Image (cartoon, rainbow, N blue to C red; front, side, top):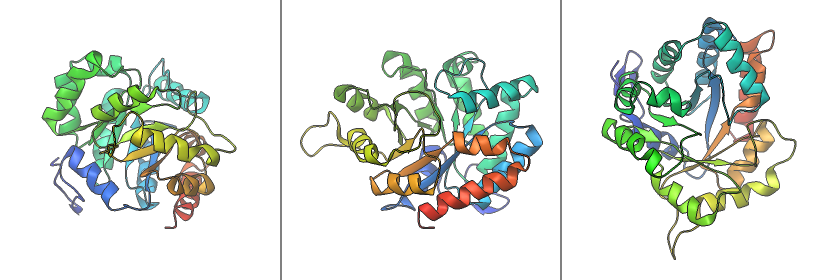
Length: 282
């Protein structure tokens, strides 16, 4: 499938990183909505229907998770969903097929762990991302520095975005280093710990976003990439608070994965997306 044209018409941007930039640019001064989907949960057929619901519900980008046996950054809801998908036989190939389908409508960033990227070789993995029409890659257990240089170089060569994470506990100098490695956007973790819903987060959003954009920068320096805020955002109120705090994107995972496990998954995720969209003034 071409990354610049599909059966539904022209894409919003070009390949990979350019397409992400276009998605964020459409919501400059507001915040792009980036829901997370666990590939193959609760089953492959329903997962495809949930992906369609994301598009219909106003997703600007989608984070697509690969089920993994030892997901260090995932909280209990996402971890359980990944385990269920693995037990049902969902493979990396299945997730790539889902991503290719979804990428016809919105930019897709794959979220996986280093072993899955390194096993086939970083060049081969980057080529597969590109050939599937995906736009970027998140690898939470890949340290930024010498360990990530080969992955970043391979993605750069393929025109794809490398999306690193920074946490509230990340030192200012380290934030600046990670920000320099970011392509497409920088993923700012709103809380310390793994993914999951939290009751109240608004008070700390501004500090987290500001640090992600400016920590460690010299006078007049700062972020040259958008900042997406995630971990714990679960409703329209949280989404509105994130946008008001200056986040360029709002990333929602555990709440949507929990909805995907309901009796009527498509209706449940659609309801959550509607609430998030209202929070963002859509």
